[in-house]
Image (cartoon, rainbow, N blue to C red):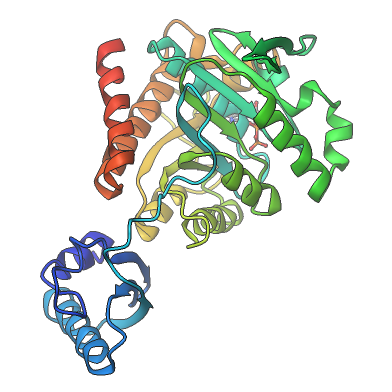
Length: 379
Ligand code: ADP
């Protein structure tokens, strides 16, 4: 199967256009996209000299044809700049003091279970011994107060270095800040554009999280201005996309992944989670009914070459637990906590793999996470 890794491997011995050093080692290979039979590579070209540019392009084309597939259509985008320039920091946004990793949970379509996954992932990480926070940025339907049993709670105030800040509310060991604490669901729904962005940015800059291993962001569904401003305001380590296997949800999930991978955004996609994969009635425990289609999100992950992080069946207790504010992953035994543990572990693996593609300074931060992971509990 055609993968980005194969293309990257094929370009392993390509020299920079100037002839100085190898392209890969100078971090000159910036992006690979695979669109059916077409491969698009974005590469840094460190020479403006025409014949060097031409030779460079030909060498890339020949390497892909020789080492991967001669029938591939190859498009090469040359970005003219010096490869010696410091690598642009992949993590944008201002770091939040004390917060190690920010993970965005996104979905293309609403109602696919993004918030359910966020709440359950948070309590699973907390059970594993991590310090976890949730920032509920879903202005169209902030559900964390309900899902985490915090409907009648409000953030407190605290003075940090002489500045008044807000303190998240804690539930099941998870610190929660939600746009729903400040506006009723009805009100939040009508917020648009600049107003919502302003409210979210204020919530981000004025919250005092203390020390956290993971801050999970429950993003609004879809792709839009809110997402762009979140990416600018927060140092997002990686994004997780939730989808059902239904074609209409998958089409939107694909757009969601595409948004994070856009050059201007460039947030690594840690993978796709398939929710509502199938239903098994109690009276027929051997049967699986694929109500929304079979393995659609898995197929999408394979096709666009991002990790598949796992599947969650439709289970009545997941919905009931959400409704009473006690995430189902807190159940002491059974398939639900196990499924969430598996998905959470896969996210850890995806995070650790991200190290390979990072500039050294960021790799150090991830290594720290891996260290804390093993010291707290083996996952
Ligand atoms: P989103 O955040 O994507 O809008 P929600 O997390 O609010 O979606 O989920 C929508 C509804 O589906 C909620 O009522 C939730 O309890 C229910 N739900 C989500 N995942 C499952 C599941 N795996 N099994 C049963 N119900 C689920």
